Image (cartoon, rainbow, N blue to C red; front, side):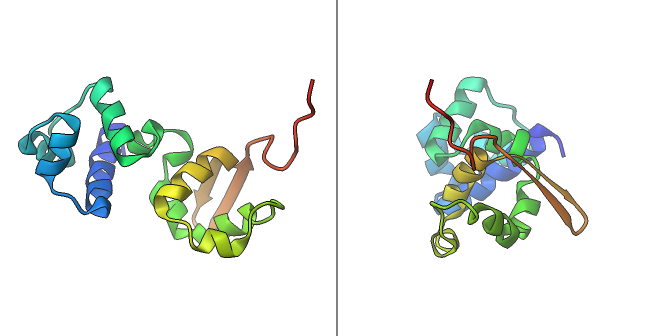
Length: 140
């Protein structure tokens, strides 16, 4: 799936998760209802400024909206959420109980801080942690 297709799908899923209409989203980001409909159906490409407005409105990283980096396979990552939680809970400051209560929006932010990459190949999942996640950096 290319970035435009991912963007279309994620704008729609984030809008529905927020429980707002296309018109309300359009009003929030300065576009018409028809433009939002066209974005959600992959018929309209947006500007970088508008992309940033969507990210701010939905409170998610731009990389999530376009499927860059760690967010490329987000839907698959969500299917393996418990495995992701098990890795995250190995950090002394993170409890599994707290992870089980986290919203998807919270998880979007947290995953980007903890993992540099998650690779899913069939039933195999590989995690690549950000170097400083489990190791405190020494002050200089």
